[in-house]
Length: 321
Image (cartoon, rainbow, N blue to C red):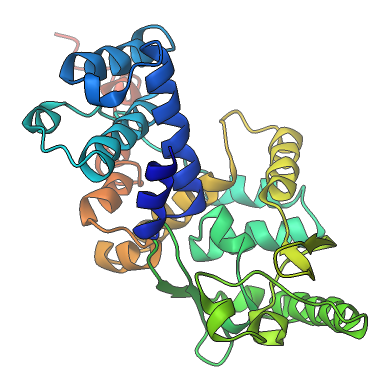
């Protein structure tokens, strides 16, 4: 497992990918009674993936995540060129994403307040993912160009998304509140934040400077033993998740909705407004336009424009013959 972690970090994968991959590899080894992966092959991989679907009833996305972890194990860690890996079929994801109407978005947002409300409006107004919003830094909010730079998003990619004019004033006030927190921390000799990659070694004081601070800082700071500094983390994602869940319940929605539903709604509503799919693809940060194409199946066109024969039954009572 040390080799697995070294291989993941050498490729600059995210901490969450490392956590996910190591967890699935350990489960794979334990499922086969602690046999070494070198001793196993196609039959064992297929058996493990099948058990996930038939016994654990996991979703296709979860099954594909497990497969990706095992592919990484054999190809990148064990350096085995196994042609049978190419023949393993990934589970399909037939489900369409859940999308809220504009009225439903207003209803849910109406049950939020404070920082969770601003963050939820950002998710809907920019298409950012939950963690991308939580990890937003002051330097990446460009009021002059009316844009937000999303750093190290999914796939460790940077992208630019729009800054909604309706959120400008509230975002300015939030950043000023973050400045007050940072100023108070610095007055006590603290005020440090975590920096990505090896930037802390290249710029030793950057983590203490204002541009690198979080737009949504956590309420409490913590002691970082390796650097012997008092740091402040960004607001934990569960704060918004809990508030959003309560807002959905309070709004009386009949559909399931999470924070990520706001991202789906952002993309769908842009397409409904006539923006081209390439623009939406860039704003969402999708690698392939086929990923963005899924939203074309749920906008108010296509099937939404087809009128059922049942709607016409009472319109023309004549011609009964």
